[in-house]
Amino acid sequence: MDLPGRHGAEINAALELSPLPSGVDWDGSIAYLDRDGVLNYGKSDYINSVAELKVIEGAGRAVGELRRAGFRICVVTNQSPIGRGLWDDVLLSSIHEELMKRLLNEDVDAEIDLILYSPFVPWSVSYIRKPRPGMLEIGRQILSSDGNGNTVAKLILADEYALSRPSEGLRSCIVGDRPADISAGLAHGVRIFCVNEREGLPSVTGRILDSSDRGDNY
Ligand SMILES: [Mg+2]
Image 1 (spheres, rainbow, N blue to C red):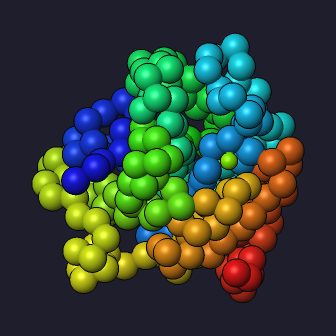
Image 2 (cartoon, helix red, strand yellow; image 1 turned 60 degrees about the vertical axis):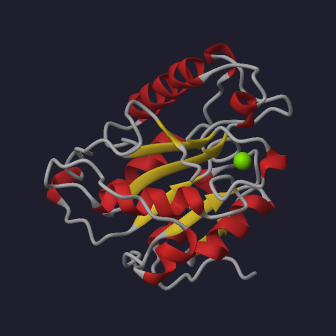
């Protein structure tokens, strides 16, 4: 079974969630965020170094607002350069460290709870690569596992996930700039917010926080 990479930990390591701002309770809602075009500007030939990372202005405040409203944040990003052999998880990790630092610099509450990445190439048609929903299913299980200090013993996917489906937060959503993000969100059954790649997350924060907004129609 393919599994995604996880920033800073083995995929099934125990997760220690930091408290939400001002003691807000978590109602199970997760904002699944695509990375490029949502938090930072994308590039046609990938973000290949920390120097190429340009964070979208307001993305940090947007993440902070979501967490203040009780969302957990799970970044789900396709990173085929790893599968193509262009660079490795260590380089990706340095980019993600810098991304998290800059978000926090803009807003002290802008913590990313979990970053999952798919190293698989498009022609692998991996369940773990968007447009398929594997990363969202894994993210749900890891974020739901917090509190007992145990490793995430058994991760399940696809049919098995559908059978014993962990309940998804009512306000959960995916934010992305591409059809692959929309398809993954549809398959996982969360609200969908499609953004312009130059505007990113800040352009839909208000809509995400409005729980009567059912997201974009597809
Ligand atoms: Mg994108």
